[in-house]
Image 1: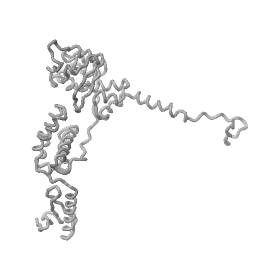
Image 2 (image 1 turned 90 degrees about the vertical axis):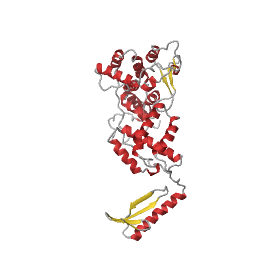
Image 3 (image 1 turned 120 degrees about the vertical axis):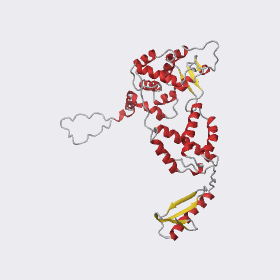
Image 4 (image 1 turned 90 degrees about the horizontal axis):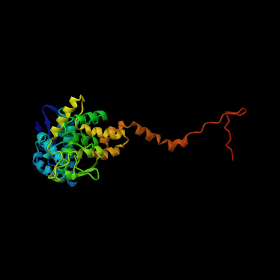
Length: 366
């Protein structure tokens, strides 16, 4: 490599002139120019230095030296007070198992190209949904690093994750649900009924406390759900009966959990075995939530109602059930007839003998 004192150099393995400079964030930058002469290369470097000065005038923050691993405790402390315990554990795992090994250097040295390469690599290893989760965690951490004045810009801003396929919709017919419920062990039966009749998640059911249940109002008050918000779950007669069947003993406290002795894995594995015994294929415990949403749609509930009942923040999550209510859409279009029906042209009067069909008939003045 032949380098001049002013940051312009050539490479023995490639043609042309290269330049180097320090950007507004304190990082050493290199690039190949299109210059044909040394003078042109120096002009290209001078233009880069001018951009650096402009950036400094605009108030770019000098970058910090903290690595992602060093920022992780501060970021997790910030998140712990704002997300559910389950979401916190997921964030913790994403940072420790994936992001920290992939980006070991200072956060200020992370480039968009580094993030794109990470997405490409992970897309070949895990689902698009997992890649999206990891990218969202990285984006949020880098956004917080900006607020903490560790980096001036977020290099992940605007980077799109791989397209996540539409969520699966697998639901049971009423007869199948009845058979599954009857085949469940006694301890699992009320859990299954609650999931199918309310659309509650497994974690919400197992985390339920007696103080969260309002039997008089036929509702459950969930203080915090997967998306971090609380919501009200309304109970129909079957759901209320399922909870009534496991009423607490006299010494039970309000903070005790009706199903607290069962682990998530125990519930899912036992349920899968029941389905296998009944030869119900490709059906998981979480699909009971889809069953509730699917039958709500088929009974005429609109997607806004379904989204509210299931606790979806984004209507796109509930839109997967849209095709299950074709009659609802047909009736909605039919309502336009009452609005536009008057625009229909009246039938033409028959042409009488002696009239010239080619001549427009005069409108009556009366």
